[in-house]
Length: 120
Image (tube, rainbow, N blue to C red; front, side, top):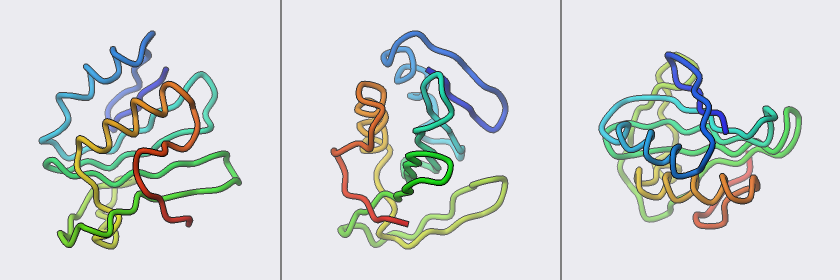
């Protein structure tokens, strides 16, 4: 299991190790990429102060999805690819929901079903 941050790449042996590592990021501004041994499928998670936006990439040229939360109306500006990014408010989920997505992804390596998605 590989977790890439803006500063370094980290390898883990278990999903629990990944979740423990990520618990320090809740109140930070960070972009994370999570995958298995292969580059795809992967999750890209933008985090800022308890909020997140999650992208799921099936393959390099395959289906792409963005988290969807029709009950959120808070606009959040994240850092993605080194640039400020403000998605529609309906793409913003809680950090806890992002952690749920990561947990599910690390078990199945498929698009998590614990949240709603919008296809890009």
